[in-house]
Image (cartoon, rainbow, N blue to C red):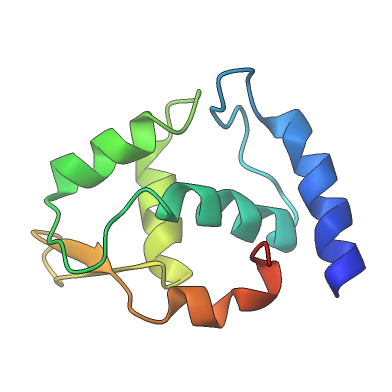
Length: 105
């Protein structure tokens, strides 16, 4: 899987602006995970975030307008946890462990 991840990481570079913003959300799951990892790394463990704060961090990472989709994907892929009513978000403790095969060694 390591070679595949390296290939996906290389392909994913085309999805970013020169200043590091994601231009388009990838269709392929491995590339999505790599893009989400890059966004999730901006969040700090042990911190509670409001939806507005989550949105601001996402906006700083993407060059398109679908913040809600990225926020939902971060939750669906278990990078972030959230209160049922969306009033509070936090970093899931095991996301790095869960996606360790995608992480740079």
